[in-house]
Amino acid sequence: AEAIQLVVGFRTMEVRHGRLMLNGHELTIRGVNRREHDGFTGHVIAREAMLQDIRMMKAHNINAVRCSNYPNDPLWYELCSEHGLYVIDEANLESNGMGLEDGITLSNNGKWCESHLARMKGMFERNKNFPCIICWSLGNDAGNGTSLHHAYCWIKRRDPERVVCYEGACREPTRSADVSKTVDMNTDMYCPKYPSPSALAEYGKSYEGVVQALPLVMIEYARAMGNSLGSFKEYWEIINQYTVLQGGFIWDWMDQGIASKIDSKDVWAYGGDFGGPDTPSDYNFCLSGLVQPDRTPSPALKEVAKVLQPVAFDALDLVKGRIRICNRYNFCSLGHLDFSWSLTADGVEVQQGLLSTHGFDDVTPGNSEEVIVPLPRRPFAWSLPSLMGGCHEYHLLLRARCRHGCTSIPAGHEVAWEQWPLASDEWAPASQPGIGRAPAGAGP
Image 1 (tube, helix red, strand yellow):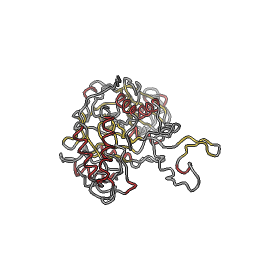
Image 2 (cartoon, one colour):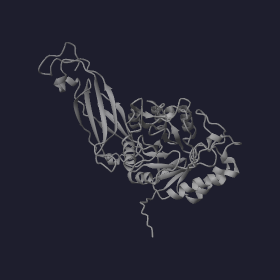
Image 3 (cartoon, one colour):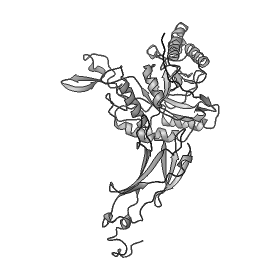
Image 4 (tube, rainbow, N blue to C red):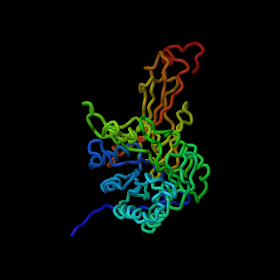
């Protein structure tokens, strides 16, 4: 006899009143696309490499992964379930080489219907018990037609407790980054690729108050080639304005290069490196990751962590140290975080402290708390003798750190921060009050 042990979990996933809901709460997808790749082992990924991916994702405020564009190693789902990453699992279905138009696409050719269904059924039956999977994707760049309509209906009957998405579920033959598509029946979400920020804002304005609307989750956006993330900050400024916009998946996690020697140099080989000068190549098209093939972070990963941070800080009155702290988590309060502040002069810390977190257990998702940072009296040189006799550039820095660690994040890990310039002292005293005399006409 054979026995297989599998950790399972229970949750509710649905689209209700125009919102993607997990356990009755609106969900924000801070996601990334991931292909199975390693710079040294190719598409065979070791357990420790998977764990390193998960730890790095969570450390940079990424909470979701799309398995693009095929089902992954079962171990990946086990680890995502254990460590807490939401997963969109995607059928190994892609036929854009045949064309995507109605009269050409294989998805609208009855002879290929069973082949489409077989890919969908195989993915579902193998992976149905992994709780990290919150959504099934019908495929990628496979056109649209009756085969995918059948696939959608089959999986909704088989698994009514998860949502289904498909980027190609539209009635237009081509896509536009600036115009929303007419969505077909075979998706529960509107999940475009690479919409422009203006198109995203237009969708938010049009459907924010419409309970019959489909939530928008970008299945791909912000292609991370080179140092670019493609208007990443601007995307999230718009997403944070409208609850019908529920995030997206960056393209993508890792540069798909392979460790090689060329001209006696160690390089990450790609594209035309594997063949002669006439070898067909997309050049560096697949080097579009947030990390390099050995998982060295690219500069863009720091921007991801900052923009996706689940805590926001608003300066209400910097003179008085009044700051509003906003909770952008989906489920937890701010009670698990410690908040600290730091005052710097010309980049050197001159004073720091902890903020009181009394009552932060009650700051639930979507709510905020106002705090007062106990800054020294102005001019700062009165309270900080080391600043006497000069004019300095001041900054205030606030940080939020995890009070306790977990399986993938250590205690003290920084999840959010914000920094503001402070006005320079209007005058720089030569000495402290009562010791020397201030310049004539100087203010208090």
